[in-house]
Image (cartoon, rainbow, N blue to C red):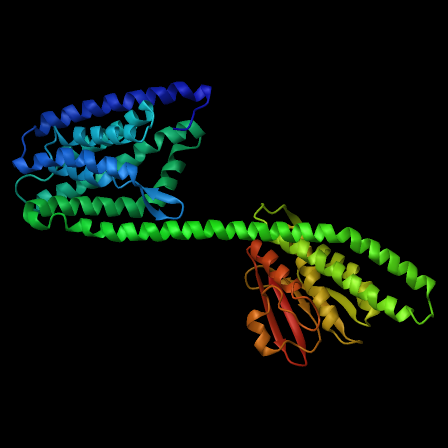
Length: 451
């Protein structure tokens, strides 16, 4: 059990100690009201069966998702409550849970509280009505209602210690727990009620609901295999991100030295035959520098760290990108203009979003022929503010469109990283990145952000 803070320890201890006492009192009341007489001697076998089943369920918890487990011990407990006499069933269920918890080396405090929880829920269910020796519509309805009360009370009592330990509102925790576990709770409730009714009406088929256990076992093996594969994949991706970051950092310094030396050589050999070769080397070094920068950006975009959100004016962000790329575009004879159709402020990671827009603009500048211009717009989309980057380049081949945003999808104009980075950044913000293109008429990329 999670340790409580000193200020929380006393009320927590009172609750942990008080519930078992209350549960025993409720069990005594249920026994006094309903008696201790077995409807038939075969039901006595449910007492040891409940103990064995609960211990087995504690030892082998069932998963209903990669991160979520459910204790099937609730099923034999509820069956015991519904089929055993009111003076026996709740205590059988509670003591079975106590034994199962101690078998798993849980503390006496936790084991006692869990046992008290089950005993109290079982006593209330038994007071409403279990299955007697005959079946009728009224009896079936009381049994169904008793099973439902059991699972509801069990959930409500289970949330009390976490609420005291964490200080979170009880109702908030109860809603969260119910939202996470209601399919499993309803399934266990329905299975227990069906088994109890079948035991009276058709004992031979009373255990038929348990035929799903082999299927549950296979599902658990599949979930465990999936969890292991996901863990391995996360390790590979983490290693890849570290590799990209390390390589980009390790290469950046010698690359800067090479570029500096090439610049010195170019100035020293201006007009000489070697100038062309030096210019080509400088251009390739610049291209490598851009690629390393994008590798760093890709590693950063893939990180699962929270976004550093702040309120950003999209008009200012686009103006900043236009200012940064105007000189580069001018060397290619391409113009860049900004059109602000709607002023919008959004909560985003400014650096990452700017990187995404810059990659789209850089791509548009490189594919645009001399004399054309790239347009950067801010407008209102169908679901929120949008940033549009439009060029008048050759367009994109139709066969490239399905894989356009995949990593390292090279084209004549780049390394294939810019569009992948842009999409990853936009997706992390909960937005979408779309493209419209026409051969010979250019392409339009639209970033649409939520809200």
